[in-house]
Length: 359
Image 1 (tube, rainbow, N blue to C red):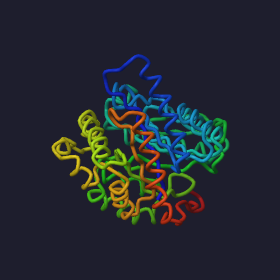
Image 2: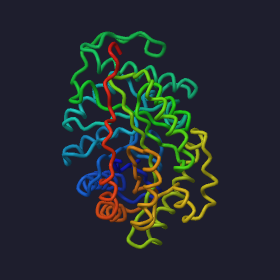
Image 3: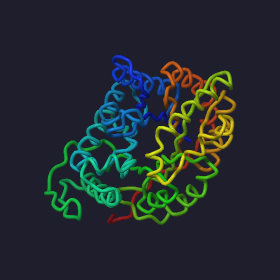
Image 4: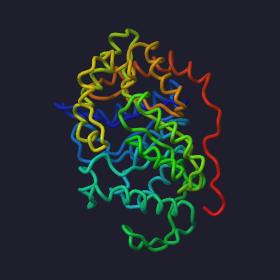
């Protein structure tokens, strides 16, 4: 199982002077440190118009900066909101990021976390899923054909043939993922051969059937891209310290802020987080809703996910009011006490296979 650091660039109010500048610089330092302590990837979300939940409106720029300070870390777009972006531009900047990073991009896509995103860009929430699917097919065609032969569809009625420049280093394109924000969307991911990026706030027990169904369904998929990305990832808020109580309370405070502040977006995923706010920090950890405490309890929490066949765990250490120093200490402990234990039993199963001829 691979380890990733996940960041939404959250910035709770009140804000001090130069708060955004400091937050961006700290996020880059955290990503660089994550590589140094043994993390495999760094994922950053795309959000628009959220004043506290996410100041990450252009993750490709932050990832480009990180790419110049790292050499091994995979760089995840988690995720590009396709109804908010034109296919030509997405294909161009994903390819550019792949070039400047020497082929380290993971390309996640999604329909948008809430209507608040997509309505501002001219689409109704009811059509955002169809827009996402058509846009993804257009972008894959841009990756797979040289030149792009053009497109005529429902939402993109006429896109003329063009040379899409540059081309990604990873051939025919970076690994493709989709945000799986409910158990049913894991099946959608499997149907078209995409990695399932589990961004729904459910614990391992609740999500186990969806992961099992994904692994079974993807065997007979019809891939939208050039190959099948047979991987499942899930994220968890994480807080860690040498002392269990300190780490538990870091994770608990972050989770409570996130579940409360993010209620509107979570409801758009048909998930009501209000019940989580009544649980104790210890209960949240025991249920796997958050991962927290000391190295031993964090290992137990991660092991719950690994036992489900998870391919990658995305740990969000910087949620809510968690400080930069707390994130860096957590990264140090993960690199020293946690990651080495799991690296010994990391899966060696090949996760990408060629698509059938003619697809």
